[in-house]
Length: 217
Image (cartoon, rainbow, N blue to C red; front, side, top):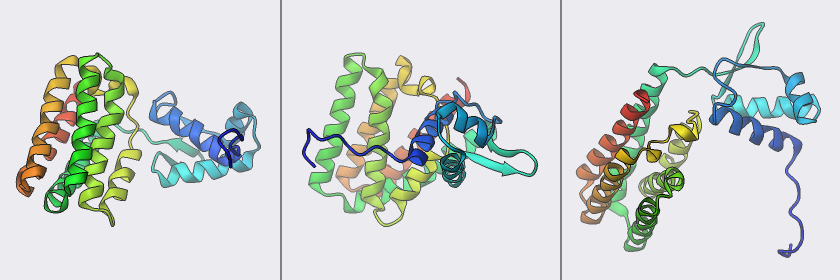
């Protein structure tokens, strides 16, 4: 396919899934909301069949649940879920950093440093809205390096299972940006030194601090 040719449109089920996923993750559809297949189909201009396919995918993502006589409901994640989410992320991403310290290549380390430099530049220019996504890439790239067989996929599954509104990103808080970038620098230094214990410790503390911020804002 040449660049000038249009891309094939996504399937209706994929379209419904992408719309609902964004609405749930951004909390435009808040936790506890019932999702009626017929109502969603009417709103999005599709039949019920692709909506049901999309809802099954969202159930696998653990973003909705099915209850007797209630149908599909968006999972309502309270403070306990926040604690569990960041605790699980700390363990998984901490292990990823530990394993990465033993196997990271010079090329992989250079790529991480380049990503970190881009974050620092965005921070200096006040482009804080870009930092959350770059941080996600930074973390997942480390886990991919440390655990390419299982851990990277698991880390993504954990992150995808928890709605975090864009406006709740700690990277939008100027008081947090410097500390978070310093944590990334510490992780990079530990990876370069091959210090597995330090890489894991700094990553765990870094993720837990993000959880503390989320619970109090």
